[in-house]
Figure 1 (cartoon, rainbow, N blue to C red):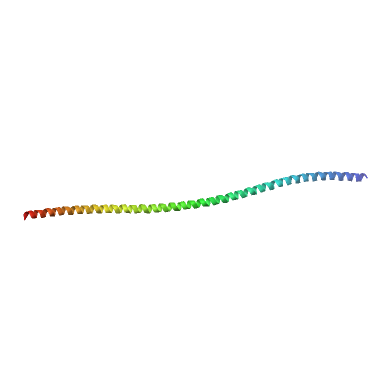
Figure 2 (cartoon, helix red, strand yellow):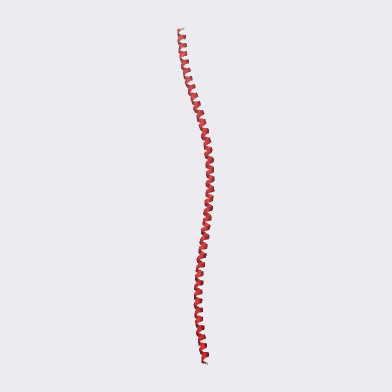
Length: 134
């Protein structure tokens, strides 16, 4: 009987020890489950934030593409304007040179006319002199 009582006491002690371990494991399990729940909640929040950021990134990409397109259009328009300006400046320069040539030709012609008028006056004077001599 003593032996059985000793075995029973040892079994109770072992049972108590096992109950204590079960209680600790159960407590640890509850704590882990609470942490797991909190982590899942944070994962959901991060996932939602990631989706928001992806949407913002897509909008920024779209805005950037539009801005680049606008910049390309502006650069193209600027290049066309610069080319047109250069062509007009070239035409203006050619017109000015042509005008200078025309003025030079006009001056040369005026000189020729002046010379011819002078000759004509000399001839008239000579004719008048010859008329008076006759």
